[in-house]
Length: 492
Image (spheres, rainbow, N blue to C red):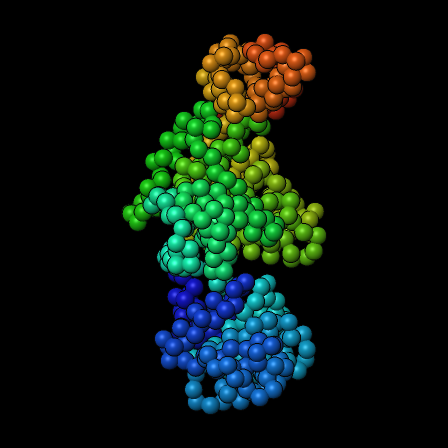
């Protein structure tokens, strides 16, 4: 359901109080006014600066800028035999005062079981403990894809009328990605992103997708817990053929209505440095959806209850952004203390919240989780239903190592055909992809220091100087590989 359908259902269900978490109050008030009109309800709005008003009336009730005075008037209004929707902005900040809290509770007690509903608007609304249980909490102010497409057309049309030199060269498939990337932003943020692109060069074309992704990354990085990442193409990762095939088989069911349920996600276990994080970016790229990483360092807080609230907000944002790929890197770190009480039970509660959400969610979000340490993964996470599949990322074989070398040489502007790639691949047995990449980088520095043109000789020298993780921590790597083999975990 979109926001209007959801709030309409809550009003029809006669909820006395609904909290709408939003950063775009004007947009939400417009939606509430339409819902109220559809249900033949009177619409009232209030803010500290504007006072209590009816509908679009610019005049407010006498002396209702004060919260207590407004609630006194509102309590008189609900005594009349008409039903209404009241939209109060930032009222929660005044409910710490005894008089305001008392009037507000009286109002809620009066409208219980009636068609009248009070809606509180704001960001991170907090209520007194005796009022909070009465409320339903939803998120609003974020247009769906249809509304975003309408806004794109409106902004481009307005710009065209103002500037006849605007060039529009937007392929339909890129436009779809633009709309999906804009999802999760408020209407004003959508306008800002589009205007920024149009004003930059007077064009609306495929190159604007990168600018919109950058805009969104900056917007969400400020929030802290979810971090926007650019996706990768499958050509950017060597090997992983089983994983690429698995994703390709499920792409259509992810976007189209069919009898097949959309995939929920997968877990990538494996040796450190073997491409699990890169694979998460490739999955998002192949599915054609934005990628967000759950920042575990910012998730946990020293304050009681804040960690759980951070997770709740992050998961609510994911639902708002869907379809989206949620990348949880080193997922075992979320649940490292879930078997004990050393953290006051926070990890247990986080585990319960996360598992319930993974099992019950109905949005089209895809989880790409990675893990290096299977010993700290709770068994509840590994059972079928949490993830569609579990893959194991092993040390790359000779063919994969050749591919990795070619990718990292080309990435640095070098022609792989000028290097003895097969020979280098044979001399890098037991190396992870990350270790091969670092050998190429170190070879560039070595050649530069010697004032020589980089060649296979420099790369080979660095490979011989490197002791790979499979040698340094041979027992841990062998344990992980044997564990996956004994349980028939699918290789990537």
